Length: 315
Image: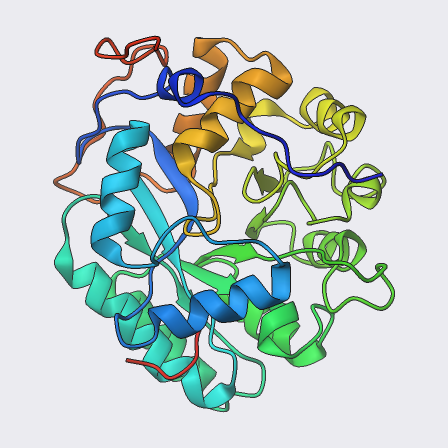
């Protein structure tokens, strides 16, 4: 059973989770999106149409940086996924453009597509440039997670990149392009691969997450889940999955990171120290680049200033 979206509470309740953000901050949001200004509005309409969720943000980089600062988060992983083979190069060019900005806060991931013929040279290009991860979104990219050619690419990339994989949607596992069972098969075939299964292991597929990847050495992120998952399922995932393999992800611009932190507190009753741990887990997987060493972080605490009152298509 899937609940209706839940309110994190009043603005003052969610504001209590804010902290000071800085480039060296050890907290990281592993699941965000930022789009080229020319296409941001088109992508937001596409996302809203598919997920039936009203985006809370613009999809622009400057706004992403602002909302993460307000949430007390120093770094963010920024994703885009080419929806056609022809968009692999443009989408990756955008990732490289983000990387060149080098504010110490942005960790862009590249993208691949099984029908893109020159994938080997593209992986080399990304690796040389300093890209450390790949986003895979079968449901939007138009292939299945168990596509043999995708596995060939992942096998070649497994020791070189972190994988952020979208999992789940409204169709049942056998019919959906991605699902926890397909993700588990990849994990078992490539146990050395560092995989993040987005949306607590599978958006709307949480009942099957319990039967597959839970308890295994697969990272899961909190993105686009905390407002929709049934309470018993949410509690079971947090109780049964290794805490060090749970990462904070907001899915901005679909969700607001400060609100998502508030939901961790209100729905799970997590302490400041537990929230701090989740916010910092991603930096263990993706340490800050040389020259941007994370600061030692205290337990996550309330904001002391709080008052109680050019690609065409990529996603």
